[in-house]
Image (cartoon, rainbow, N blue to C red; front, side, top):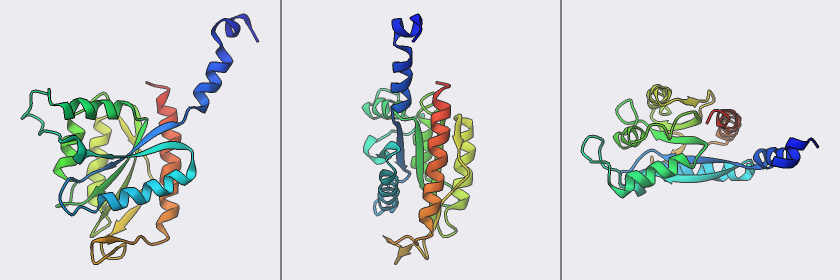
Length: 198
């Protein structure tokens, strides 16, 4: 070991940094009564936790009671808590449903209420709706690009007709498991790479 490494613990520090797990937030993109996103989010988290490759947590925007952008002085405690939560995360998985061919107003507002906290991080998208939420996901990708969030290619899409019993009880088809794991592989790889830029 060289003198610099002895003085500053170079190799040990590098090893600890490598072993530190990434923190990935699974963001529930709806706040309405009767929403389905908690069921989908818990399913994704159960799959993710089995991997043991990161610290995964559900982040429910409803819990932050966020005010509407432009109708606040920025002093509400929910805004500060939201900012701190996002800053603590290395990457994201967005659970988004399609409303009128786009994402929910609550999710758009939550995205807009932060800026640098999103920058240089990666995200995956799990969407659902009558067409698998594909149009909402495409809108979300454009927003994420503006926030310097790198969205990954693999995108699990869930149908209200085949993955939800009576449109309300989530019963996903087995085929989605590979897509979720593929998406998480990419989120972890990109989140780790982008962490070096922050």
